[in-house]
Length: 200
Figure 1 (spheres, one colour):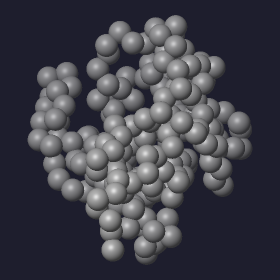
Figure 2 (cartoon, rainbow, N blue to C red; figure 1 turned 180 degrees about the vertical axis):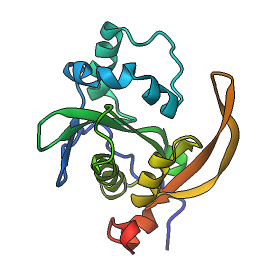
Figure 3 (cartoon, rainbow, N blue to C red; figure 1 turned 30 degrees about the vertical axis):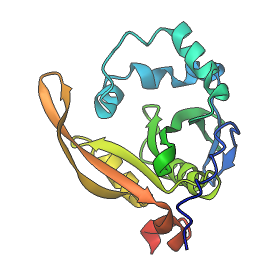
């Protein structure tokens, strides 16, 4: 029986883990990763798919300050995605928007152009989602994916995320209004299938 009177333990976001998969390694992101991630920030297609309006934040000095401060955050987790075969930083995964009252977090992932399609993103997603449930004690991890990004939606579905509903006209991108699908994965779903929800 769940004891609703006692709050769940606070997730340990202060500890920044290294998570190792077959093809990727996730480790704490640092200011030195900005150079490798810069193609991701500058690519117009990445900006479109993630709905990232240019807010003047692409200055390298500002980016280095931002990534250099990730180690100190106690309410979110920012990890670099490293391709094990090459040792190259190919993207980032983030758990953010922690909602302590509801034991939930948001999730996002972005990869450097030219690294899509090889399963790196799906494996990185599974690693960080598993950490969120198994180590941080989260109950729900959610994301939003835009209608013009079906490839990302398929990758999220492979990692076990389930579509919940549509946010109509959630993004205005260069005169076009675009819907976003809300997706989530719950801890019971993750544990029920041993971290392999698409293989159930």
